[in-house]
Amino acid sequence: MISHPSRHCTVELHALPSRIGQVRRIVSAHLRYWHLDLLIDRAALGVTELLTNVHQHAEPDKLCTVELELLLERLTVSVRDHDPRLPVVEDVGPLATGGRGLAMVAAMSETWGARPDGERGKVVWFTLPTVATAVAAPARAPRLVTAEPSLHPFTHVETALDGARPAHAPARSAVPG
Image 1 (cartoon, rainbow, N blue to C red):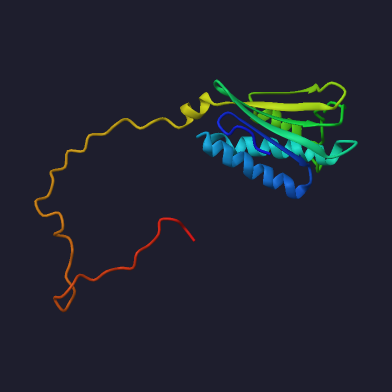
Image 2: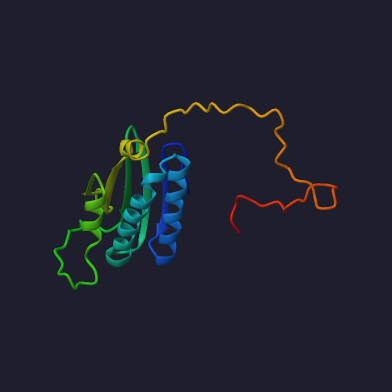
């Protein structure tokens, strides 16, 4: 289920590897819809890490809820599951093959945390500033073009070798594929 698309999105799922990719695409689509394209990579990485933690560690089940909330100048991404154990950032060695997910979430987000959700589980969340989006992609200053208009705008069209109609190229789509 996807709720009100303007400022809030909620997705319920079982945190299975195939579903994690689908949720990542849903998060990306919503951020595009909200014109927050520059946040897509970090939000998708963060939600992937949080869902992977649910998949690997949550008990008694893998049912969880992903929530996106855009308030003022901050995007909050949260994952709620039924396991009451709060996550811990591990200090892993350089050769470890896991245990870095929460450290990555902490490094790429503005803030993050975890809180108990009553007796029903916990919520793990992170925030991303939307103001940095505007700073990272500065608007171009308007530019005045002072070229003089041509009296004969189609003088660049060449006639075919036999003098008949101009040679035409097949139409091409701007959309790849």
